[in-house]
Amino acid sequence: MNEPIIKPIEAIIAETRKEIQPFVFKRLEARTPRKAGEKIARTVTVTSGKGGVGKTSLVANMAICLAQAGQRVIILDADLGLANIDVVFGIRPRYSLMDVINGDMKLDEVMVQGPHGIQIIAGGSGVSELADIENEKAQRLFNQLRFLEDKADFLLIDTGAGISGSVISFCQAADQIVVITTSEPTALADAYGIIKIISNRRPESHVSVLVNRVDNDEEGIQVHARLARVAGEFLNFTVHYLGNLPQDRNMHIAVRQQTPLMLFSPMSPAATGLRRIVSQSFYETPENLPDSGGEGFFTRLAKLFKGGSAQQ
Ligand SMILES: Nc1ncnc2c1ncn2[C@@H]1O[C@H](COP(=O)(O)OP(=O)(O)O)[C@@H](O)[C@H]1O
Ligand SMILES: [Mg+2]
Image (cartoon, rainbow, N blue to C red):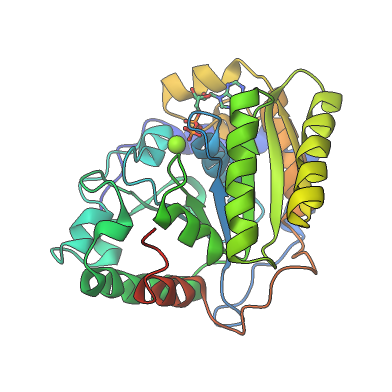
């Protein structure tokens, strides 16, 4: 396993704990992690259509929030074009998913440990599309990834921008999909575009929208209402509301410091908002998640690739 290059992150964590203790820790710690082998990790794929709307920031900070609640979290950076989850964590992994795909490394050799025991699998650039990888190599990769599902409560997947075959497959195989958007018309159009494809591919998919960088709650509610109305009318598809996150300048500072906002500035508006969302929507499993027949995410993904539906 790579040794992360960690600044005083353990110190930051200790401080964070102290700061948010009176607010959330009692409640968070009341939740016991799932016992190994009890059930397969809940997979949440975060996607957007448009780039730069906040997917990677969301995945990183959500992971911290869940890990602080005692959940075991694995992040898979599936953005092979512009993989950068490691940058957000201030970690420089020497190896990536590409080394596993090429058969040079084992998966546990490329996993990097982040704060609070979060396991991170860096994407690594080199191919633009997972779908471009020969099926044999892809299957070998999925076989290794499958073992992870027993070891985690949550598997969070950060996808690339755009509507590529593999992004759709990562959505199609997930238990839950979070579509993140801002209120900008281009972001909204792309969010709708990806919802449309998801609803076509797997009508029982559980999709919720998170509206990022809003000025107020009303803005988030309205953006969701518009998306939900169009999806209901034209696709006969339900789009849930995850919530909204405010525009927060601390986010930029945190990115520059290469420390996730949740640790860098835990009481900032966006960190506080995200904690609320996670405690409302992720501590309990929603009842209306699609039935996966007991199959894990990577088993489903492997089938999609084998069946060729990952290649568009
Ligand atoms: N709520 C927010 N307030 C302010 N800036 C944000 C917010 N969310 C994300 N950003 C900024 O937007 C930029 C893109 O975010 P990122 O998570 O990398 O997007 P993506 O992964 O979708 O490309 C980053 O510089 C990040 O700091
Ligand atoms: Mg990103």
